[in-house]
Amino acid sequence: MTTDTLVRRTPAHSAARPTKQALGLGARMRRHWQLYVMLALPLIWLAIFAYWPMYGAIIAFKDYNVVDGIFGSRWVGFKHFERFVESYQFWRLMKNTLILHVYELFATFWLPILLALGLNMARRRWYRRSVQLITYAPHFISTVVVVGLIVVIVDPNTGVLNQFLGLFGIGPIDVLNNPDYFRHLYVWSSAWQTMGFSAIIYLAALTSVSPELHEAAIVDGASRLRRIWHVDLPAIRPVAVILLILNIGSIMSAGFEKVLLLQNTLNLQTSEVIDTYVYKLGFASQVPQFSYAAAIGLFRSVIGLVLLVLANTIARRFAKSSLW
Image: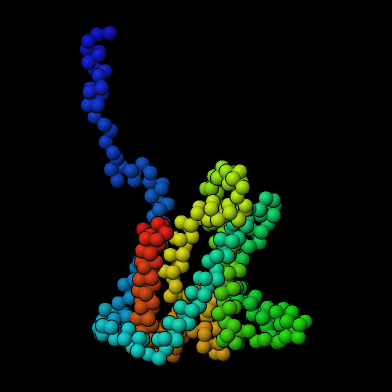
C-alpha cells in the first residue's frame, strides 16, 4: 500500500469530504408531491370553511345591514358587546351555559377512563370486544335520531320510562317539559353516546404500558387496584390532561343541535344557552339582528380562548403535560 493511499484514507481527509446538501422545499415537494396533494385537500377545506368566514366577524363592531354590506355598514365599536353584558339575559345565559357544560364535563370525563381500565383488565377477548362494540356503536347515531329516541322513551303516555316507573306506583313524569330534568337528560344521554368513542383513546394509551410493569407489580404482591393506580393511570394521564384542556376550552359552547332539539317553551328556563340564543337572534327572529348575534358569538369565543390558555398553563405547571 503506497503512501498516497494512506494519505487519502486518513480521517482528516475523510472529514473534509463535502457532505450531501439538504434538499430545498421545492425539491422535496417535487419528490413527494403525492403527500402534498393529500395535505392540500384538508388545508383548502380549512381555509374556505374555517378561516375565510372569519372576516365576517367584523359585523360585531358595526350596525350591519344587507343593503350597505359588511364594509359599508356604520362602525359602532363595542356597542353590541355592552348591550349584551347589560341585558337581563346575560347572567341567565351565562349561568345556563356554564352549568350545563361543567355538569357534562364532570359527569362524562371519568366514565371513558373507567370503561377503558375495565376493558384493559378483562381477560376474555370476546367479552372485551363485545362490550367495546356495544358502547362504541352509539357514537355513529346522529343527534336527531338520539333526540328522537329520547322523546319516545320519556313520553309521559307511552314511554318506556314512565311504564317502568308505573310498576312502582310512580308517575307519569313529563320529563321533556320540566326544566328541572333538562340538564340531566342532556348530560347522561351525551355520556351514553360518547363514552365508548372516548374510551378508545384511553385504550390506545394503555397499549403503551409494558406488560413487564404489571408482572413486576404482581411479583411484589400488588392487587389489581394497586396496578391500576400505579401503572395504568400514570400511562393515560397525559392523554387525559389534553382531553380535559380541550373540553375546558369549549366550555362556553354547549352542543347546539341537541339543546335546540330538546328545547321547548316549558323548559326554556334552563335550556336556553348562548348558542341557541345567538341562533334565534340571527336566523329565527322576524327581524334578524346579525351584528348583535355576531357580537355575542365573538364574546363566547374569546371567553373560550381565555379558558383554553388558562387551562393549558395550569396543566403545564402542575401536571407537566399540555397542548403547547
